[in-house]
Image 1 (tube, rainbow, N blue to C red):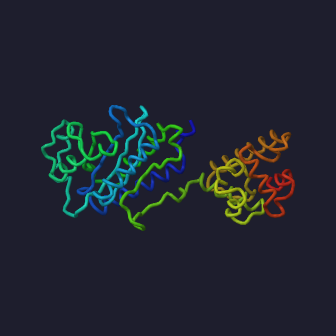
Image 2: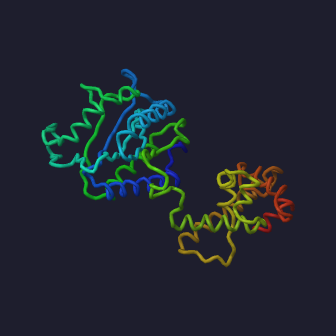
Image 3: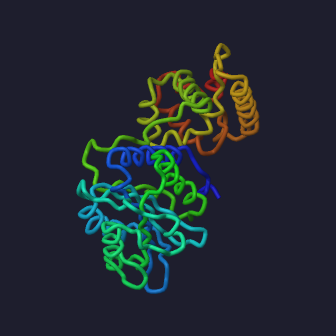
Length: 319
């Protein structure tokens, strides 16, 4: 399913999450940081509805997480069974807090928790467990909460671990999950976050897309991408995705590698094939797909004078 495909936006979100986790650990140390996993449950039934899960988490964040912890980063994860969980890294308030001192992780693995420090035991009591439910039960979460100190001494590894839940969630998400927030940053004041997902990776494929957007804008007489937004709308990148990808680049273009040059040529040939295929349909004349046909007609109608020429002429100009 398309909803389970890992897209560039997901990768950027995971990269920003990884960086924020690294910053938290470097700034506050693993002594004050705690991994927390909470599940959603009503009675004996696990919550699978995205909107209900978001409502409960918002309530928990407002009344519990924000007042108790200095900062925290949370990611949602839908298991293959359909159950929803939240995984987070929280920073305890107070510079003297220490949930790591003396912890024996090998003993923890076999159920021996005698080495747990007082601050860690206090968090366990507050959050609760199966036998002694804690505060999370009041907000519709399962009584069993997993709260463990950070074992790794490498912040990069911890960031990759938490960011990996995004790909796991995308692989198991349902259609109703599309558009839902993947990551929550709780307790951050304006300007405190160090990373944003508003960027593009510097890869050969993103280079090719930028070149094709530039070619599309230039060859059809537009002035910048803002012109596309004004005529087509805020979702111009999605609507014109096929038209942009199959837009041929100028012959004098210098490619960063032979591989990406081959990809560009294959896209050009496929665009020519699709335009030939649609030549007999008035609505699709000069277009490579139905999605962009309406937008292309809008550009022809409301764009600069060159855009008001017949669609076939535009294709000739592009080629």
